[in-house]
Each structure stands twice: as structure tokens, then as C-alpha cells.
Length: 195
Image (cartoon, rainbow, N blue to C red; front, side, top):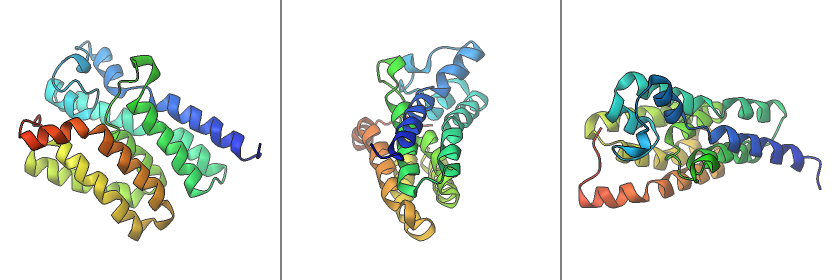
């Protein structure tokens, strides 16, 4: 086995484990409020916590989910891994958030986690997508639509701002879209949850 493969596998495993720690559950337990998976949209993420428990807990959830994969990504960069390898570690973080083994592989939509990963790997792409998400969420009051549009914009922004990361960002986008399939159906019916 190539000597470079073992560190990549190790960091990807650590990324998956760090991603699987769902910020919404930790925040809601610490605040003594109900499990967000049992109420509202059932999603353990920023937007459902915002609807259920307000801005303070939602922001805490966002910060935890964005930050949890950062240490392992910084380590991948410090080890001099190529952009595609850094991207695989980042994808492992998103997969851990989306499919956590401790919660029967039922996790979140990976939007906040993707923001954190992009903030480390391609900060300008992350900031452009965050600005788009904020604008759309404010105008249309629908987190799913804002998330899907931001995810779709990420590869386009990376063509200009971070061309070495285009393929891995396309993989991030594909995962976010897959995690939003139910929301896409609800958007089509006009009964998607509002912020």
C-alpha cells in the first residue's frame, strides 16, 4: 500500500467521526430542550433548531457543525495533501454528519458542515455561498431553497476562485442535493417548512 494512502485513510476516518457529532443534539441537550429530530422538520440542523428554539441555539448549532471538521482539515493541509485528498477528508466530514453511526445513520443535511469545510479549503467560495444563502433565506424564507441554490453555486464559484477544488466541491454539492431530495419534493408541492 502506498505510504500516502494510510494518512489519507486515517484522516478520512477521523473526519467521518468528527462529522458524526451532531451539533444540534449537543446544543439542545445542553439547553435542556427537546430533541430536534422529534419535532418540526425532524432535521438535526440549524434551520430546524431556529424554528423550534430561536436564534441563540440555532447559531450555536451552526458554529458547532461548521467547526467540527476543521481540525482534521487543518491537519490534512499541514501534511501537504493534494487538493483532491483534502477534499476526500472534507467529504468524510460531510458523510459523518449525514450518516452518523450513533444515530442509525440518520443525520443532517450537511449544509453547515459543508460551509465549515469550504471555509478551511476555499474560504472565498464559502463566503460567497454564505452570502447567497443569507440573501435567499431572507427573501424567500425557505432554508432548503437557499441551501440548494448555494450548493449549486459553489462549483461555479470555485471555477473562478479555487479551480483546484472544483471536482471535490462538485462532490459536496451532489451530497447536499441528495440530502435535500425530500425537501425538493416538498418545494414542488408548495408545503416546504418556512424559516
